[in-house]
Each structure stands twice: as C-alpha cells, then as structure tokens.
Amino acid sequence: MIFQLLSSPTSFIIFIIVLLITLSVHEYAHARAAEELGDPTARLKGRLTLNPLAHVDPIGLILIVLVGFGWGKPVPFDPYNLKNPRRDSAIISFVGPLMNFLMAIIGALLYRFFVAIDLSTLSTLAMIILPFFIKINLMLGLFNLLPFAPLDGFKVVGGFLSEEQAAEWYSLERYGLLFLLAFIFPLVGNRSLLDIVISPTINFLYALLLPHL
Image 1 (cartoon, rainbow, N blue to C red):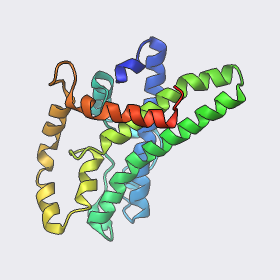
Image 2: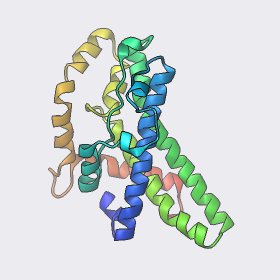
Image 3: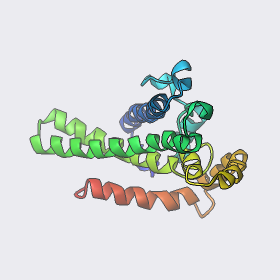
C-alpha cells in the first residue's frame, strides 16, 4: 500500500516529512504517558520531546520505506516506577497507536475544512498532504497494535493477562522480531501476510474518514 503513496519525488518528500512528524508524536505520546504514570526514564533519556532525531529507529524507518511498515525507536520506561506495572505498561504502549488514530481523525477534519473553505493554493496543498497524513497514521496505528515484540501491541496484550499468563507471554518476547519479519516479507505471491491483513482495514477506515475519495 505504501508504494501507492510514493509515485513521484514530490510524493516521497511529503511522505518522509509526514512520517517524521507522525513517528515523533507517536513516541512522544509514550514518553508523556510514562511521565504522567510516575516513570521519569523517558524524560531523563531525552525522549520527552517532539524532535524527530530523538525518535527515529534506523531499522524501523528503512522497513517503512522498503515494505511499508515499521516503527520508531522504542521509548524506554521502568515498570518498577509504575504503581501497577502490568496495567500501566499496557497504557503506555497503547497511547502511541491511539495518538495515530486521533491524528488520522484530525487530518480528516482538516481535509473537510479546507475543502469547504476552498482557499485556492492553501486548500490544494492541504488536499495533497492530508491524505498522506491520514493513511500513514492509520498504517502506523494498526501496525503497532500487532501482538509482536517490539511493537506496542505485545505489551498491550500483556496488560490483559493474569500474572502467570503474562509471564508466559513475555517469555515469547525474544522471538517477536522473527515472527514480525515473517509477517512482513512477501510469502503469498508478491504480498506479505501483513499486507493481506492490514491493507483492507486501512482502506476501510480511510473510506470512513473520507468517504468521497
């Protein structure tokens, strides 16, 4: 799906700018949630910022460009500083994808606004950039909710398990990247399992937000 957004050099530049903004807000949301829940680790490591340089993970960024899905640099936090480590870890993990979905909604509202006011050049620019913004946020939000380490969904699932179940679940963390890579790279024809699962969901949500496009 991502390659449909990269049809020209201009599209690629817009994609990179939007991606850096989106990743920064996503990771900042994690850091802010951890701070509010009592853990200063992210702040002490310089992650409580919207500066993209603090949040870009080289491997995650390369994967986004090459295969359409990836991640930012994980925000560190210490569960021992949290009042309810399992629950609060799940909350910290969930707010990143949640922020992506909120940004997609905001992007759709802005798109409708600029279409309605029709300010010539400004509206035209918004109508070019905002679809990128919406699709990238939907993509990253859904992708990061997959239950594979190091993605957010892994710890979100752990927050809903009993202590014994959570211990078994976290024992699988070391294999998460292997499962994730198998899910990302093409196995069925020229499509990955990830593309087969997530792309229809992205298209469905995008159609809900902007039904006339």
